[in-house]
Image (cartoon, rainbow, N blue to C red; front, side):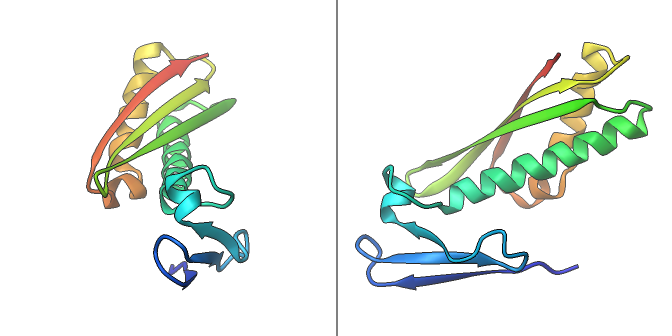
Length: 136
């Protein structure tokens, strides 16, 4: 399987702007700029997209890990915070809440750690990854 996205940029790094599009068209000429990346401008940015990819991948992997242990989650919600400092994306922190009938807190936390280490996006990111779990 191969997925793709396209970035177009016009102008200088600080004053220019660009747009991103994805194969699925979920992003279709979505704007991004210096202001949307380093300030509070309208548009997206690479760190936000990495956070979305990591949260989505991790949450799906967690569902598979739970299923392999005989549990079916009623609900999983993950927030991913990506840290960009000194020009380096240095940390991804996953905060997950889940409602999983019949599971203990310890089993849930073990499944979270498994998913944290083994989701494909975690494997491609060369940075510090941390997580915290709340069983609802």
